[in-house]
Image (cartoon, rainbow, N blue to C red; front, top):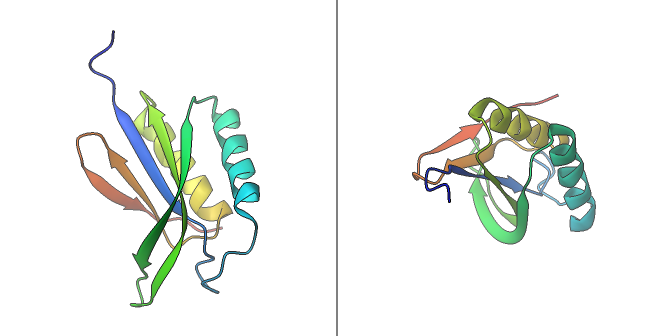
Length: 110
């Protein structure tokens, strides 16, 4: 057993950052997420949850959120996946957290 595994979670909201509405069915977002993980050749698990977010301009939104869990994936790869999902899902930011409870936000746009 490897007791030194690092678990990373990426939280991706599904509401469009400008309109505040979810543009596609959740299944479509899941399909895109799975394709991204396949292209990066990373094993993953994913959950659909509900969450809330305060935008940089102060707006608050509640939305469906995907929680992508990765284990022992290099930080550089995690950041690239987070940036891709942020851009593809048109998010203001996505939240990345490590099992040590360190949390930071990655921002990216097309």
